[in-house]
Image (tube, rainbow, N blue to C red; front, side, top):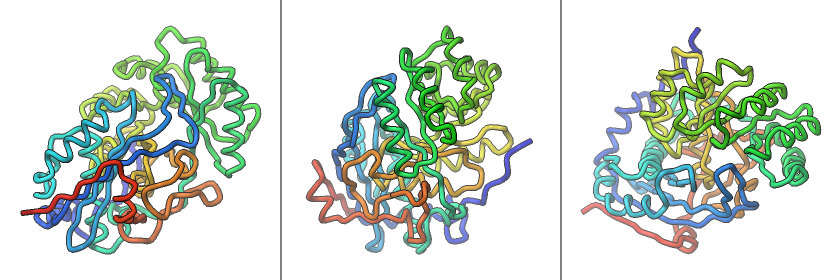
Length: 375
């Protein structure tokens, strides 16, 4: 049995490809701003500790209106660095202004794609979620939590619960595994709990996997190394807990292979990696399968999060990682930031992505800045 068909991706009644093609010769300027975002707390995973975020905002302008996207390569996840992205965007500014998405690092290309979609929706004065065929509804939040000790982990979960968050994703790794998760499940039996190993286990961890399987978890994300798709497929057949892939989906080719192998129940797809167009295309690929997309981010500002919010409105998306901006970041580059209402984030009726960037303020806070115009 296939999944229900989502609404067609349209902008103002036109097929998305046609709508975007009408903009290709209309870009008058490209705005690039490099930002350093401070985290509320370090993020601890099986691949290391992240203490801050380096991102680049991409603005594309037409008729005095700017559409925004965000490039946020994540340490030990993305294959490129922010330096790679920044250099690629600057070198290919002429190509971007001509309406093409050049061959640059994937998070940079995704940001350009996002900006084009935001601009298309703003020019037709409709929300991006409506432009792609979504239906606005409150989207339940899920936040990722980690801790070096069980007590520190429980403190972070308690903070999330006090903030009204209905679901968490616990970061696990060898040595911080079953006991940590069991403590969360026992302390909050009505909380929706998932786990994310960030590829830190291997096939020998069968006892750990079997113990996880008894905890009635929402899903188990990336238990095995990123290139072990066949191992994930076997684990999916053996365990009851749904298997999600994340780090394995580092390219469109890897995503296609994961689909062919039925390597997971959920594909954790990041708009910041494949862009809005990529999410829509992958969602189409999954329509005749039992698999679903689980949208997630790269710890971005409200610009990147806004694109994820829009995509969650499609009818056949799986459980999303959607957190209030303030849960991870001290400050933001866009307003209004995304905060939860009764444990959910609500898509906005405003045109485009529903947040605005103050250019003057952006120039003031950016660590690097560029504006390119057409000849």
